Image 1: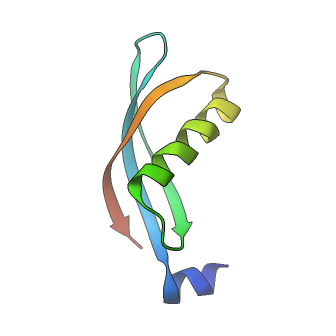
Image 2: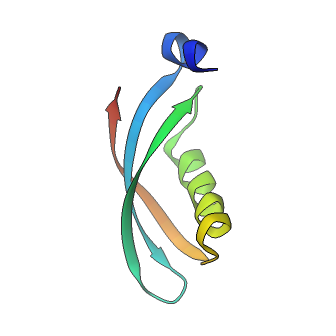
Length: 69
C-alpha cells in the first residue's frame, strides 16, 4: 500500500493530544498512510488503537498536526 498511498493518498506523521476517561491528558505522534479520510475518522481509529495498545479507555483525541514525509 505504500506506493499507492504516496501517489494517491496521504503519507506522513500526525501529532495528537487526548484525554482518558479518568481525566489524564496525553500527547503523541504516529506515522500514517491513508486514502481520503477525515480528521474525525482518524481520531476514531486512534481511540481504538490506543485502547488496544495500552488498555486505557480514551474520552477524546484531537489531531493537532500533519507532517508529510
